[in-house]
Image 1 (cartoon, helix red, strand yellow):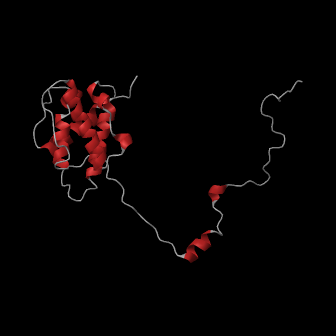
Image 2 (tube, rainbow, N blue to C red):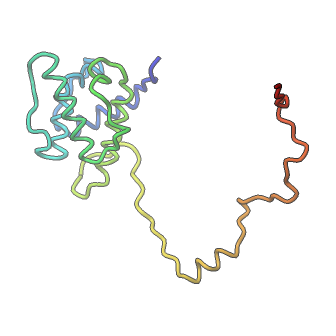
Image 3 (cartoon, rainbow, N blue to C red):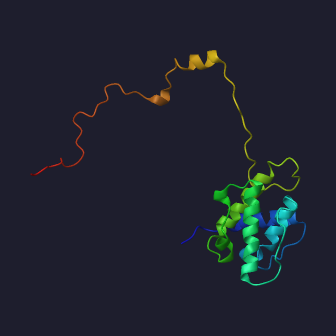
Length: 172
């Protein structure tokens, strides 16, 4: 049994795709049917990163339309979506893992927020900014003298008297 689908996350993802695409999406079809051919995903990716997908197949057999999904996945990875959050073609085409498709769209929305030229709608939480800390040499030396409470205490700790199951018997 695959991961559970979340209708609310799927709706948020479609709303975000529609807003970035600038054209209405047919909501009479199911979520996976709307995205299945990859055309909408490719068009949206070209809006976010113009020219990243050179060719979008709008008709043809299954193989041609499956290439759209592959092109989107490659473009999303190049755009900055982590590879573990990008879905595989079969996840969408054969409906093997639709929650992974939703995760990818949400990850794309998160990555868009880090791009300075992106002015579109928000999707998902904002990624944290780097918070680099600088310590002086004196501060680093002082820290070596402090024993953190996370270390715990090992006073009197030993394994004496511990018995882990049956003793090993060696017979010659």
